[in-house]
Amino acid sequence: MPDQQSAGAAGWVGHVLAGHRLDALIGEGGMGVVYRATHLRLGRTVALKVLPPALAADLDYRRRFEREAAIAASLEHPNVVPIYDAGHTDGVLYLSMRFVDGEDLGAVLQREGRLGIEGLCAVLGPVADALDAVHEAGLVHRDVKPGNVLLVRAGRPRGGQVYLCDFGIAKGATAAGSDITSAGQYMGTPQYSSPEQIEGRWVDGRSDQYGLACLAYRCLTGEVPYPRPEMAAVVYAHLAADPPRPSRLRPDLPAAVDAAVARAAAKHPDHRFPTCSAFLDALRAAAHTPVPRPRPRPRPTAPYPTAAPRPMEPAATTRAPGGPTRRIGTEDPAPDDPAPARTLPLPDTAVVSEPGQPEPGQPEPGQPDPAQQAPPGVPAPVDVRAERGTDDHSVTVSWTAGGPQDVEYKVTRLTAEGRRQVVGRTRSTGIVDGAVAPDAPVPVYEVTARLGTTVSPPVGTSTGGPAAEPEPPGGIPAVRHLVVTGPGTLAFEWPPGITEAMVVVRPDRLPETPDDPAATAWKITNMRYELDGGLRLPSSVPLPCHVAVASCRRVDGGLVVAPGFDPSATTTVGS
Image 1 (tube, rainbow, N blue to C red):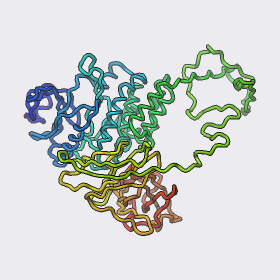
Image 2 (image 1 turned 60 degrees about the horizontal axis):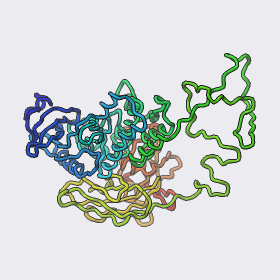
Image 3 (image 1 turned 60 degrees about the vertical axis):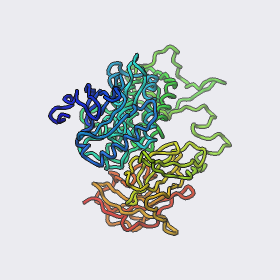
Image 4 (image 1 turned 90 degrees about the horizontal axis):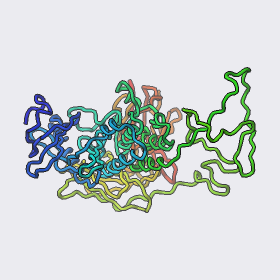
Protein backbone atom coordinates (compact mmCIF):
# COMPACT_ATOMS: atom_id res chain seq x y z
CA MET A 1 0.00 0.00 0.00
CA PRO A 2 1.23 3.54 -0.69
CA ASP A 3 1.86 5.96 2.12
CA GLN A 4 -1.45 7.72 2.76
CA GLN A 5 0.14 10.99 3.77
CA SER A 6 2.20 11.29 0.59
CA ALA A 7 -0.02 9.66 -2.02
CA GLY A 8 -3.39 10.84 -0.76
CA ALA A 9 -6.65 8.93 -1.04
CA ALA A 10 -6.59 8.88 -4.85
CA GLY A 11 -3.12 7.30 -4.78
CA TRP A 12 -4.57 4.11 -3.32
CA VAL A 13 -6.72 3.39 -6.41
CA GLY A 14 -5.51 0.25 -8.18
CA HIS A 15 -3.89 -1.26 -5.10
CA VAL A 16 -5.13 -4.28 -3.13
CA LEU A 17 -6.19 -4.05 0.52
CA ALA A 18 -7.31 -7.11 2.49
CA GLY A 19 -8.23 -8.99 -0.68
CA HIS A 20 -10.04 -5.99 -2.21
CA ARG A 21 -8.86 -4.16 -5.32
CA LEU A 22 -9.58 -0.44 -4.97
CA ASP A 23 -11.20 0.56 -8.26
CA ALA A 24 -12.35 4.16 -7.72
CA LEU A 25 -12.57 6.83 -5.05
CA ILE A 26 -16.19 7.47 -4.04
CA GLY A 27 -15.79 10.04 -1.29
CA GLU A 28 -13.77 11.08 1.72
CA GLY A 29 -14.34 12.84 5.02
CA GLY A 30 -12.95 13.32 8.48
CA MET A 31 -13.66 9.73 9.55
CA GLY A 32 -12.41 7.86 6.51
CA VAL A 33 -12.27 7.33 2.77
CA VAL A 34 -14.73 5.21 0.73
CA TYR A 35 -13.74 3.34 -2.43
CA ARG A 36 -15.63 1.26 -4.95
CA ALA A 37 -13.73 -2.00 -4.72
CA THR A 38 -13.79 -5.56 -6.01
CA HIS A 39 -13.54 -8.52 -3.64
CA LEU A 40 -11.05 -10.58 -5.65
CA ARG A 41 -11.94 -13.99 -4.30
CA LEU A 42 -15.71 -13.58 -4.67
CA GLY A 43 -15.67 -11.23 -7.66
CA ARG A 44 -18.18 -8.97 -5.94
CA THR A 45 -18.33 -5.17 -6.13
CA VAL A 46 -18.37 -3.62 -2.68
CA ALA A 47 -17.92 -0.26 -0.98
CA LEU A 48 -14.74 -0.33 1.11
CA LYS A 49 -14.36 2.27 3.84
CA VAL A 50 -10.80 2.87 5.05
CA LEU A 51 -10.37 4.62 8.39
CA PRO A 52 -7.42 6.86 9.34
CA PRO A 53 -4.26 5.05 10.49
CA ALA A 54 -4.25 7.12 13.69
CA LEU A 55 -7.38 5.23 14.80
CA ALA A 56 -5.95 1.84 13.85
CA ALA A 57 -2.95 2.57 16.06
CA ASP A 58 -5.21 2.66 19.11
CA LEU A 59 -5.60 -0.96 20.23
CA ASP A 60 -8.72 -0.26 22.32
CA TYR A 61 -10.36 1.56 19.45
CA ARG A 62 -9.49 -1.26 17.06
CA ARG A 63 -11.07 -3.88 19.32
CA ARG A 64 -14.20 -1.82 19.81
CA PHE A 65 -14.44 -1.09 16.11
CA GLU A 66 -14.42 -4.80 15.33
CA ARG A 67 -16.98 -5.58 18.06
CA GLU A 68 -19.35 -2.88 16.85
CA ALA A 69 -18.84 -3.94 13.24
CA ALA A 70 -19.83 -7.48 14.24
CA ILE A 71 -23.02 -6.18 15.87
CA ALA A 72 -23.85 -4.02 12.87
CA ALA A 73 -23.20 -6.95 10.51
CA SER A 74 -25.74 -9.01 12.46
CA LEU A 75 -28.50 -6.46 11.78
CA GLU A 76 -31.16 -7.82 9.46
CA HIS A 77 -32.99 -4.74 8.21
CA PRO A 78 -33.93 -3.92 4.62
CA ASN A 79 -32.89 -0.27 4.98
CA VAL A 80 -29.50 -0.83 6.62
CA VAL A 81 -26.53 -1.17 4.27
CA PRO A 82 -25.32 -4.77 4.80
CA ILE A 83 -21.77 -5.14 6.16
CA TYR A 84 -19.66 -7.99 4.78
CA ASP A 85 -16.34 -7.76 6.59
CA ALA A 86 -14.25 -5.57 8.90
CA GLY A 87 -10.71 -5.73 10.19
CA HIS A 88 -7.25 -4.15 10.13
CA THR A 89 -4.29 -4.69 7.85
CA ASP A 90 -1.25 -2.73 6.71
CA GLY A 91 -1.80 -0.27 9.52
CA VAL A 92 -5.36 0.71 8.50
CA LEU A 93 -8.89 -0.24 9.56
CA TYR A 94 -11.31 -1.20 6.82
CA LEU A 95 -15.01 -1.92 6.51
CA SER A 96 -16.51 -3.78 3.55
CA MET A 97 -20.20 -3.21 2.79
CA ARG A 98 -22.73 -3.42 -0.04
CA PHE A 99 -22.09 -1.05 -2.93
CA VAL A 100 -25.22 1.05 -3.48
CA ASP A 101 -25.57 2.22 -7.07
CA GLY A 102 -27.28 5.52 -6.42
CA GLU A 103 -26.83 8.93 -4.84
CA ASP A 104 -27.16 10.40 -1.41
CA LEU A 105 -30.11 12.48 -0.24
CA GLY A 106 -28.02 15.65 -0.29
CA ALA A 107 -27.53 15.33 -4.07
CA VAL A 108 -31.26 14.66 -4.54
CA LEU A 109 -32.21 17.78 -2.57
CA GLN A 110 -29.65 19.84 -4.46
CA ARG A 111 -31.22 18.76 -7.76
CA GLU A 112 -34.93 18.60 -6.93
CA GLY A 113 -35.29 21.17 -4.16
CA ARG A 114 -37.73 20.90 -1.25
CA LEU A 115 -39.91 17.87 -0.58
CA GLY A 116 -43.57 17.69 0.32
CA ILE A 117 -44.72 15.87 3.42
CA GLU A 118 -45.66 12.71 1.50
CA GLY A 119 -42.30 12.63 -0.28
CA LEU A 120 -40.49 13.35 2.97
CA CYS A 121 -42.18 10.43 4.74
CA ALA A 122 -41.46 8.12 1.80
CA VAL A 123 -37.73 8.83 2.14
CA LEU A 124 -37.30 9.27 5.90
CA GLY A 125 -39.76 6.58 6.99
CA PRO A 126 -37.34 3.77 6.09
CA VAL A 127 -34.51 5.77 7.68
CA ALA A 128 -36.46 6.02 10.94
CA ASP A 129 -37.12 2.27 10.93
CA ALA A 130 -33.44 1.59 10.32
CA LEU A 131 -32.38 3.93 13.14
CA ASP A 132 -34.72 2.19 15.57
CA ALA A 133 -33.15 -1.15 14.59
CA VAL A 134 -29.67 0.28 15.15
CA HIS A 135 -30.72 1.57 18.59
CA GLU A 136 -32.20 -1.78 19.59
CA ALA A 137 -28.84 -3.36 18.75
CA GLY A 138 -27.15 -1.04 21.25
CA LEU A 139 -25.60 1.37 18.73
CA VAL A 140 -26.09 5.08 18.11
CA HIS A 141 -25.57 6.55 14.65
CA ARG A 142 -24.52 10.05 15.78
CA ASP A 143 -24.23 11.42 12.24
CA VAL A 144 -27.71 11.51 10.69
CA LYS A 145 -27.39 13.80 7.67
CA PRO A 146 -28.27 13.84 3.94
CA GLY A 147 -24.92 12.31 2.97
CA ASN A 148 -25.62 9.18 5.01
CA VAL A 149 -28.99 8.45 3.37
CA LEU A 150 -28.55 6.61 0.06
CA LEU A 151 -31.20 6.20 -2.64
CA VAL A 152 -30.81 3.56 -5.35
CA ARG A 153 -31.14 4.98 -8.85
CA ALA A 154 -34.31 4.20 -10.79
CA GLY A 155 -33.79 1.39 -13.27
CA ARG A 156 -31.10 -0.27 -11.14
CA PRO A 157 -31.64 -3.41 -9.04
CA ARG A 158 -33.59 -2.41 -5.93
CA GLY A 159 -34.47 0.89 -7.64
CA GLY A 160 -36.04 3.35 -5.23
CA GLN A 161 -34.65 1.56 -2.16
CA VAL A 162 -33.54 3.81 0.71
CA TYR A 163 -30.51 2.89 2.80
CA LEU A 164 -29.00 4.25 6.00
CA CYS A 165 -25.22 3.96 5.95
CA ASP A 166 -22.19 4.73 8.12
CA PHE A 167 -23.88 3.93 11.43
CA GLY A 168 -22.29 3.36 14.81
CA ILE A 169 -18.96 1.99 13.55
CA ALA A 170 -16.50 4.80 14.15
CA LYS A 171 -18.98 6.41 16.52
CA GLY A 172 -20.41 3.77 18.84
CA ALA A 173 -22.52 4.56 21.91
CA THR A 174 -20.30 5.53 24.83
CA ALA A 175 -20.43 7.43 28.05
CA ALA A 176 -19.71 11.13 28.06
CA GLY A 177 -16.09 11.92 27.39
CA SER A 178 -15.04 8.36 26.62
CA ASP A 179 -15.06 8.34 22.80
CA ILE A 180 -11.85 6.62 21.72
CA THR A 181 -10.26 8.73 19.00
CA SER A 182 -6.58 9.39 18.70
CA ALA A 183 -7.18 11.84 15.88
CA GLY A 184 -9.44 14.03 18.03
CA GLN A 185 -12.12 14.55 15.36
CA TYR A 186 -15.51 16.01 16.22
CA MET A 187 -17.97 13.14 16.26
CA GLY A 188 -20.88 14.24 14.07
CA THR A 189 -21.95 17.08 11.77
CA PRO A 190 -22.68 20.31 13.68
CA GLN A 191 -25.76 21.28 11.63
CA TYR A 192 -27.45 18.01 12.65
CA SER A 193 -25.97 17.39 16.12
CA SER A 194 -28.06 17.24 19.30
CA PRO A 195 -27.31 19.45 22.31
CA GLU A 196 -26.18 16.48 24.39
CA GLN A 197 -23.81 15.37 21.62
CA ILE A 198 -22.32 18.87 21.32
CA GLU A 199 -21.80 19.09 25.08
CA GLY A 200 -20.11 15.69 25.23
CA ARG A 201 -22.82 14.12 27.40
CA TRP A 202 -24.26 10.62 27.14
CA VAL A 203 -26.14 10.07 23.88
CA ASP A 204 -28.70 7.45 22.95
CA GLY A 205 -31.23 6.90 20.18
CA ARG A 206 -33.03 10.14 20.99
CA SER A 207 -29.93 12.02 19.87
CA ASP A 208 -30.32 10.43 16.44
CA GLN A 209 -33.98 11.49 16.50
CA TYR A 210 -32.83 15.09 16.95
CA GLY A 211 -30.63 14.73 13.86
CA LEU A 212 -33.55 13.17 11.98
CA ALA A 213 -35.70 16.19 12.88
CA CYS A 214 -33.00 18.52 11.54
CA LEU A 215 -32.87 16.42 8.37
CA ALA A 216 -36.67 16.62 8.02
CA TYR A 217 -36.48 20.40 8.35
CA ARG A 218 -33.79 20.47 5.66
CA CYS A 219 -35.95 18.38 3.31
CA LEU A 220 -39.07 20.50 3.85
CA THR A 221 -37.50 23.96 3.68
CA GLY A 222 -34.27 23.60 1.72
CA GLU A 223 -32.24 25.02 4.63
CA VAL A 224 -30.56 23.62 7.70
CA PRO A 225 -32.41 24.45 10.95
CA TYR A 226 -29.94 27.08 12.15
CA PRO A 227 -28.21 28.76 9.19
CA ARG A 228 -25.46 30.87 10.74
CA PRO A 229 -22.28 32.30 9.16
CA GLU A 230 -20.05 31.06 11.97
CA MET A 231 -19.88 27.48 13.26
CA ALA A 232 -19.81 28.73 16.86
CA ALA A 233 -23.17 30.41 16.25
CA VAL A 234 -24.57 27.15 14.86
CA VAL A 235 -23.46 25.27 17.96
CA TYR A 236 -24.93 27.93 20.26
CA ALA A 237 -28.25 27.81 18.38
CA HIS A 238 -28.51 24.05 18.91
CA LEU A 239 -28.00 24.63 22.63
CA ALA A 240 -30.19 27.69 23.20
CA ALA A 241 -32.35 28.72 20.20
CA ASP A 242 -36.02 27.81 19.87
CA PRO A 243 -36.75 24.53 18.07
CA PRO A 244 -37.03 24.92 14.29
CA ARG A 245 -40.51 25.38 12.76
CA PRO A 246 -40.75 24.61 9.03
CA SER A 247 -43.86 26.79 8.51
CA ARG A 248 -41.73 29.91 8.84
CA LEU A 249 -40.38 29.13 5.37
CA ARG A 250 -43.33 26.98 4.23
CA PRO A 251 -46.62 28.67 5.27
CA ASP A 252 -48.50 25.97 3.34
CA LEU A 253 -47.54 23.33 5.94
CA PRO A 254 -49.99 22.38 8.71
CA ALA A 255 -49.22 23.47 12.26
CA ALA A 256 -49.00 19.78 13.18
CA VAL A 257 -45.77 19.56 11.18
CA ASP A 258 -44.27 22.34 13.28
CA ALA A 259 -45.35 20.55 16.46
CA ALA A 260 -43.84 17.22 15.37
CA VAL A 261 -40.51 18.71 14.29
CA ALA A 262 -40.29 20.91 17.39
CA ARG A 263 -40.87 17.91 19.67
CA ALA A 264 -38.32 15.70 17.91
CA ALA A 265 -35.80 18.58 18.06
CA ALA A 266 -36.48 19.44 21.71
CA LYS A 267 -33.39 20.47 23.67
CA HIS A 268 -34.08 17.90 26.40
CA PRO A 269 -34.07 14.23 25.29
CA ASP A 270 -37.00 13.35 27.58
CA HIS A 271 -39.21 15.80 25.68
CA ARG A 272 -38.75 14.01 22.34
CA PHE A 273 -40.67 11.07 20.87
CA PRO A 274 -39.90 7.61 22.30
CA THR A 275 -38.63 6.37 18.92
CA CYS A 276 -37.73 7.72 15.50
CA SER A 277 -40.66 5.83 13.99
CA ALA A 278 -43.04 7.62 16.37
CA PHE A 279 -41.74 10.92 15.02
CA LEU A 280 -42.42 9.82 11.43
CA ASP A 281 -45.89 8.62 12.44
CA ALA A 282 -46.60 12.13 13.70
CA LEU A 283 -45.45 13.60 10.39
CA ARG A 284 -47.63 11.17 8.44
CA ALA A 285 -50.63 12.17 10.55
CA ALA A 286 -49.79 15.83 9.95
CA ALA A 287 -49.89 15.24 6.20
CA HIS A 288 -53.66 14.74 6.48
CA THR A 289 -54.23 17.77 8.71
CA PRO A 290 -55.90 20.60 6.76
CA VAL A 291 -54.23 24.00 6.80
CA PRO A 292 -56.80 26.45 8.27
CA ARG A 293 -57.60 29.41 6.06
CA PRO A 294 -56.65 32.55 7.97
CA ARG A 295 -59.52 34.94 8.70
CA PRO A 296 -59.02 38.30 6.94
CA ARG A 297 -58.28 41.24 9.17
CA PRO A 298 -61.01 43.94 9.37
CA ARG A 299 -60.27 46.78 6.97
CA PRO A 300 -59.86 50.19 8.68
CA THR A 301 -62.33 52.93 7.65
CA ALA A 302 -59.60 55.59 7.76
CA PRO A 303 -55.85 55.39 7.21
CA TYR A 304 -55.08 56.97 10.59
CA PRO A 305 -57.10 57.42 13.81
CA THR A 306 -58.68 60.89 14.16
CA ALA A 307 -58.83 60.78 17.96
CA ALA A 308 -56.99 59.20 20.83
CA PRO A 309 -57.87 55.52 21.00
CA ARG A 310 -60.22 54.45 23.74
CA PRO A 311 -59.72 51.32 25.84
CA MET A 312 -61.16 48.34 24.01
CA GLU A 313 -64.35 46.88 25.39
CA PRO A 314 -65.50 43.32 24.85
CA ALA A 315 -67.81 43.19 21.89
CA ALA A 316 -71.34 42.00 22.48
CA THR A 317 -72.27 38.76 20.86
CA THR A 318 -75.45 37.26 19.60
CA ARG A 319 -76.25 33.78 18.53
CA ALA A 320 -79.03 32.60 16.29
CA PRO A 321 -80.71 29.34 17.26
CA GLY A 322 -78.51 26.59 15.94
CA GLY A 323 -76.22 29.10 14.25
CA PRO A 324 -72.70 30.32 14.90
CA THR A 325 -71.75 33.05 17.32
CA ARG A 326 -71.36 36.49 15.68
CA ARG A 327 -70.02 39.79 16.88
CA ILE A 328 -72.50 42.69 16.78
CA GLY A 329 -71.35 45.52 14.56
CA THR A 330 -69.17 43.38 12.26
CA GLU A 331 -69.80 41.54 9.05
CA ASP A 332 -68.54 38.12 8.16
CA PRO A 333 -66.16 38.20 5.19
CA ALA A 334 -67.45 37.06 1.87
CA PRO A 335 -66.60 33.44 1.08
CA ASP A 336 -64.48 34.49 -1.90
CA ASP A 337 -62.70 37.29 -0.05
CA PRO A 338 -58.97 36.69 -0.57
CA ALA A 339 -56.89 35.99 2.52
CA PRO A 340 -53.93 38.25 3.35
CA ALA A 341 -50.64 37.21 1.81
CA ARG A 342 -48.94 36.62 5.18
CA THR A 343 -51.02 36.11 8.29
CA LEU A 344 -49.57 34.61 11.42
CA PRO A 345 -51.52 31.47 12.40
CA LEU A 346 -53.17 31.22 15.76
CA PRO A 347 -51.15 29.46 18.45
CA ASP A 348 -51.74 25.74 18.71
CA THR A 349 -53.43 26.28 22.09
CA ALA A 350 -55.96 28.86 20.84
CA VAL A 351 -59.29 26.98 20.75
CA VAL A 352 -62.73 28.62 20.74
CA SER A 353 -65.45 26.75 22.64
CA GLU A 354 -69.17 27.01 22.13
CA PRO A 355 -71.13 28.40 25.11
CA GLY A 356 -72.10 25.75 27.57
CA GLN A 357 -69.36 23.35 26.43
CA PRO A 358 -66.45 22.35 28.70
CA GLU A 359 -63.10 23.98 27.99
CA PRO A 360 -60.61 21.87 26.03
CA GLY A 361 -58.81 19.49 28.34
CA GLN A 362 -61.53 19.76 31.05
CA PRO A 363 -63.59 16.69 32.04
CA GLU A 364 -67.24 16.36 31.17
CA PRO A 365 -69.66 17.30 33.97
CA GLY A 366 -69.89 14.46 36.44
CA GLN A 367 -66.73 12.78 35.14
CA PRO A 368 -63.53 12.51 37.23
CA ASP A 369 -60.67 14.80 36.36
CA PRO A 370 -57.85 12.69 34.84
CA ALA A 371 -55.29 15.07 36.34
CA GLN A 372 -56.49 14.12 39.82
CA GLN A 373 -56.15 10.40 39.20
CA ALA A 374 -52.93 8.66 40.17
CA PRO A 375 -50.91 7.42 37.16
CA PRO A 376 -51.03 3.65 36.65
CA GLY A 377 -48.04 1.70 37.81
CA VAL A 378 -45.54 0.27 35.36
CA PRO A 379 -44.93 -3.47 35.83
CA ALA A 380 -41.26 -4.31 36.25
CA PRO A 381 -39.65 -6.79 33.84
CA VAL A 382 -39.07 -10.30 35.16
CA ASP A 383 -36.46 -13.02 34.63
CA VAL A 384 -33.63 -10.75 33.48
CA ARG A 385 -30.81 -12.80 31.92
CA ALA A 386 -27.36 -11.99 30.48
CA GLU A 387 -25.51 -14.49 28.29
CA ARG A 388 -22.37 -14.28 26.19
CA GLY A 389 -22.41 -15.84 22.74
CA THR A 390 -20.03 -18.58 21.66
CA ASP A 391 -18.92 -17.13 18.32
CA ASP A 392 -19.86 -13.49 19.03
CA HIS A 393 -18.35 -12.27 22.30
CA SER A 394 -21.11 -9.67 22.76
CA VAL A 395 -23.45 -10.09 25.72
CA THR A 396 -27.16 -10.58 25.04
CA VAL A 397 -29.44 -9.25 27.77
CA SER A 398 -33.03 -10.53 27.65
CA TRP A 399 -36.04 -10.45 29.94
CA THR A 400 -39.78 -11.12 30.09
CA ALA A 401 -42.29 -8.27 30.00
CA GLY A 402 -44.09 -7.73 33.29
CA GLY A 403 -47.35 -6.72 31.65
CA PRO A 404 -49.12 -5.99 28.35
CA GLN A 405 -48.24 -2.27 28.20
CA ASP A 406 -46.06 -0.96 25.38
CA VAL A 407 -43.22 0.36 27.54
CA GLU A 408 -39.67 1.53 26.95
CA TYR A 409 -36.92 -0.45 28.67
CA LYS A 410 -33.63 1.05 29.78
CA VAL A 411 -30.72 -1.34 30.28
CA THR A 412 -27.66 -0.44 32.38
CA ARG A 413 -24.55 -2.34 33.30
CA LEU A 414 -22.62 -2.20 36.58
CA THR A 415 -18.96 -1.35 36.01
CA ALA A 416 -16.03 -2.67 38.03
CA GLU A 417 -15.87 0.74 39.74
CA GLY A 418 -19.45 0.39 40.96
CA ARG A 419 -20.98 2.88 38.49
CA ARG A 420 -24.01 2.35 36.27
CA GLN A 421 -23.62 2.88 32.52
CA VAL A 422 -26.48 2.89 30.03
CA VAL A 423 -26.34 0.11 27.44
CA GLY A 424 -29.38 1.34 25.52
CA ARG A 425 -33.14 1.68 25.36
CA THR A 426 -35.55 -0.54 23.49
CA ARG A 427 -39.21 -1.49 23.26
CA SER A 428 -38.40 -5.15 22.67
CA THR A 429 -37.42 -7.63 25.40
CA GLY A 430 -33.75 -7.94 24.53
CA ILE A 431 -30.66 -5.95 23.66
CA VAL A 432 -27.06 -6.71 22.62
CA ASP A 433 -24.19 -5.16 24.57
CA GLY A 434 -21.10 -5.08 22.37
CA ALA A 435 -19.00 -2.91 24.70
CA VAL A 436 -17.87 -5.72 27.02
CA ALA A 437 -14.31 -6.92 26.41
CA PRO A 438 -14.10 -10.58 25.34
CA ASP A 439 -11.90 -11.48 28.31
CA ALA A 440 -14.03 -9.64 30.88
CA PRO A 441 -16.69 -11.39 32.98
CA VAL A 442 -20.36 -10.85 32.17
CA PRO A 443 -21.40 -7.73 34.12
CA VAL A 444 -24.46 -7.30 36.30
CA TYR A 445 -27.25 -5.68 34.29
CA GLU A 446 -30.32 -3.78 35.43
CA VAL A 447 -33.53 -3.29 33.41
CA THR A 448 -36.14 -0.62 34.16
CA ALA A 449 -39.48 -0.23 32.38
CA ARG A 450 -40.72 3.25 31.61
CA LEU A 451 -44.15 4.52 30.51
CA GLY A 452 -44.26 8.29 30.08
CA THR A 453 -42.69 9.74 33.21
CA THR A 454 -43.46 6.71 35.38
CA VAL A 455 -40.78 4.07 35.88
CA SER A 456 -40.84 0.61 37.36
CA PRO A 457 -38.53 -0.71 40.06
CA PRO A 458 -35.24 -1.85 38.50
CA VAL A 459 -34.66 -5.59 38.09
CA GLY A 460 -31.11 -6.90 37.77
CA THR A 461 -29.19 -10.00 36.81
CA SER A 462 -26.96 -11.93 39.16
CA THR A 463 -24.66 -13.61 36.62
CA GLY A 464 -21.03 -12.55 36.96
CA GLY A 465 -19.65 -9.18 37.88
CA PRO A 466 -19.52 -7.50 41.28
CA ALA A 467 -22.56 -7.73 43.49
CA ALA A 468 -24.75 -4.68 43.91
CA GLU A 469 -24.24 -2.78 47.13
CA PRO A 470 -27.04 -3.58 49.61
CA GLU A 471 -29.31 -0.77 50.75
CA PRO A 472 -28.68 0.39 54.32
CA PRO A 473 -31.44 -0.78 56.68
CA GLY A 474 -34.17 1.81 57.14
CA GLY A 475 -32.71 4.40 54.71
CA ILE A 476 -31.99 5.40 51.14
CA PRO A 477 -28.45 4.70 49.86
CA ALA A 478 -26.52 7.92 49.41
CA VAL A 479 -24.88 9.35 46.32
CA ARG A 480 -21.10 8.96 46.57
CA HIS A 481 -17.90 10.56 45.31
CA LEU A 482 -18.97 13.99 44.09
CA VAL A 483 -16.19 15.67 42.11
CA VAL A 484 -15.77 18.71 39.89
CA THR A 485 -14.90 17.89 36.27
CA GLY A 486 -14.97 21.42 34.87
CA PRO A 487 -16.27 24.95 35.52
CA GLY A 488 -19.70 24.35 36.98
CA THR A 489 -19.77 20.64 36.02
CA LEU A 490 -20.09 17.78 38.52
CA ALA A 491 -19.73 14.03 38.34
CA PHE A 492 -20.87 11.54 40.95
CA GLU A 493 -21.73 7.87 41.44
CA TRP A 494 -25.29 6.65 41.68
CA PRO A 495 -26.17 3.97 44.23
CA PRO A 496 -28.08 0.97 42.85
CA GLY A 497 -31.84 1.48 42.56
CA ILE A 498 -31.75 5.28 42.67
CA THR A 499 -33.01 7.22 39.62
CA GLU A 500 -33.44 10.72 41.05
CA ALA A 501 -31.33 13.10 43.08
CA MET A 502 -31.52 16.53 44.72
CA VAL A 503 -28.68 19.02 44.31
CA VAL A 504 -28.27 21.40 47.26
CA VAL A 505 -26.20 24.60 47.04
CA ARG A 506 -25.02 27.14 49.62
CA PRO A 507 -22.90 30.20 48.82
CA ASP A 508 -21.13 30.36 52.23
CA ARG A 509 -20.37 26.80 53.33
CA LEU A 510 -21.29 23.19 52.66
CA PRO A 511 -24.96 22.30 53.23
CA GLU A 512 -25.56 20.29 56.37
CA THR A 513 -28.66 18.37 55.27
CA PRO A 514 -30.83 18.21 52.13
CA ASP A 515 -33.43 20.40 53.84
CA ASP A 516 -30.87 23.01 54.91
CA PRO A 517 -33.03 26.18 55.22
CA ALA A 518 -30.24 28.44 53.93
CA ALA A 519 -29.58 26.34 50.83
CA THR A 520 -30.92 26.49 47.31
CA ALA A 521 -32.15 23.09 46.15
CA TRP A 522 -33.48 21.73 42.88
CA LYS A 523 -34.38 18.21 41.86
CA ILE A 524 -33.01 16.34 38.87
CA THR A 525 -35.86 14.04 37.84
CA ASN A 526 -34.81 10.72 36.33
CA MET A 527 -31.37 12.12 35.85
CA ARG A 528 -29.87 8.70 35.19
CA TYR A 529 -31.81 8.61 31.95
CA GLU A 530 -29.88 11.68 30.82
CA LEU A 531 -26.42 11.98 32.30
CA ASP A 532 -25.54 8.89 34.30
CA GLY A 533 -23.40 10.63 36.86
CA GLY A 534 -22.78 14.10 35.49
CA LEU A 535 -24.46 17.47 35.97
CA ARG A 536 -23.80 20.99 34.73
CA LEU A 537 -24.90 23.62 37.23
CA PRO A 538 -27.41 26.15 35.85
CA SER A 539 -25.96 29.49 34.82
CA SER A 540 -28.13 31.15 37.47
CA VAL A 541 -25.98 29.61 40.23
CA PRO A 542 -23.23 32.11 41.19
CA LEU A 543 -19.73 30.72 41.62
CA PRO A 544 -18.01 29.85 43.83
CA CYS A 545 -20.58 27.75 45.65
CA HIS A 546 -20.70 24.71 47.91
CA VAL A 547 -22.61 21.70 46.58
CA ALA A 548 -23.99 18.44 47.96
CA VAL A 549 -26.13 15.74 46.35
CA ALA A 550 -28.81 13.65 48.06
CA SER A 551 -30.53 10.54 46.73
CA CYS A 552 -34.29 10.49 46.10
CA ARG A 553 -36.76 7.67 45.69
CA ARG A 554 -40.38 7.44 44.59
CA VAL A 555 -42.62 5.87 47.24
CA ASP A 556 -46.37 5.58 46.53
CA GLY A 557 -46.13 8.34 43.95
CA GLY A 558 -44.31 10.76 46.26
CA LEU A 559 -40.68 11.82 46.33
CA VAL A 560 -38.69 10.80 49.41
CA VAL A 561 -35.30 12.48 49.91
CA ALA A 562 -32.46 10.81 51.78
CA PRO A 563 -32.03 12.42 55.21
CA GLY A 564 -28.32 13.07 54.75
CA PHE A 565 -25.32 13.12 52.46
CA ASP A 566 -22.50 10.69 52.04
CA PRO A 567 -19.37 12.57 53.24
CA SER A 568 -17.84 12.21 49.79
CA ALA A 569 -20.91 13.68 48.03
CA THR A 570 -19.96 17.29 48.86
CA THR A 571 -17.64 19.64 47.01
CA THR A 572 -16.90 23.27 46.17
CA VAL A 573 -17.25 24.61 42.63
CA GLY A 574 -15.37 27.68 41.43
CA SER A 575 -12.27 29.42 42.61
